[in-house]
Length: 123
Image 1 (cartoon, rainbow, N blue to C red):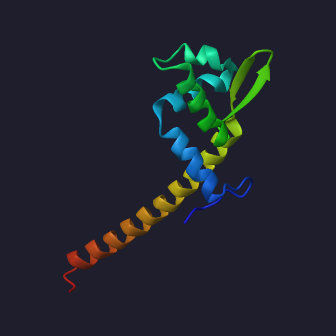
Image 2 (cartoon, one colour):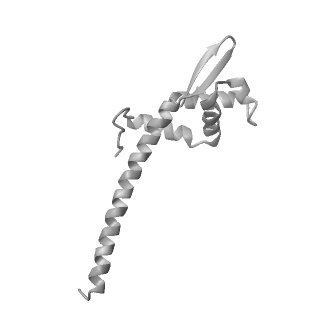
């Protein structure tokens, strides 16, 4: 069951793509680096100990998850992080947090009630 944010709901396939993309440390780093400013794919490739093609593939995965956008300027492909998608994913996680906090509060109340019942000598 996926809980959707009211303002910008994410479909299950979008959530899957986002979190699969963010499961990789290199891709998370690319998103982090490109949130503040655009970076060319070639500049990004120079930051990692992998081939240019491997970095291109990481960018493609991020682009398909809408975590980055890519545009061409001359011969370069510029990548920019998409904060809107991150906000939507954060809203989803916030909703899950509220669900779990509610469940924990209910469990705490049940345990407290059971503890009071035990201490009063009830059976």
